[in-house]
Length: 271
Image (cartoon, rainbow, N blue to C red):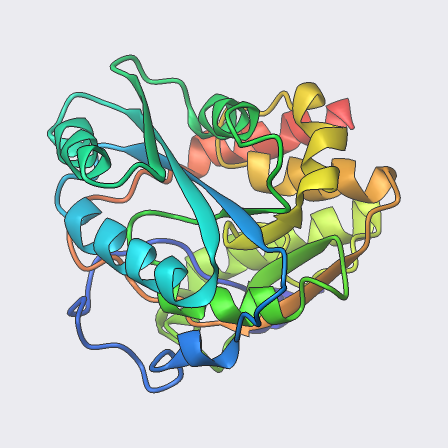
């Protein structure tokens, strides 16, 4: 596969642009596309790793709570907070007014892998679905309904960053090549039936999480791939749905291509 082909199939990575309140038309009113019916037994545990996101956490948490309130009768949100800015203070204040919100705080940097694993260990034992997404507004909480609609069809629903939605085609050629190459290698190496292996916006069945969480070893962004790989090895089914992926409106991206490259390399050797 040449560079142009990889770039065309590539997915995106966090950036810094775009007004947060100006949602794409494809995002508007998505919450109405999933309707809970009386008698449905739905409980979602949202696990949100957060590292120094004071610039966006107020908007993200407000939109996340609002979206879940509209879609499901019972939910919990577990914020696994790292860093020393005011993120933990803001979320703790929010949790005081909403008993469904839990905040686990570590001033020391754990890394995305351990932070995600910690959140998965804290989910309610009676939950049915586990949602994981980014807190930097790359992902839109209003689109959770898209994943929920397919939750009865597969053990894992991946929010796929489509070139027809969001900023994929706006990315520099180098970033598209790196992201596309990583996805292509992982798909081929492990036979993953997913076009966006590195997407962090997903909905898992609780049974799937129970099977794999104790064996997670990733340190950083490669945790997204490890979750899929281990789930597939357990025989779990995977499907995907297009999502809108936009640049973070404020703050600084935490993605390091060097650390990610090392992490994915080690993952290939381990699994």
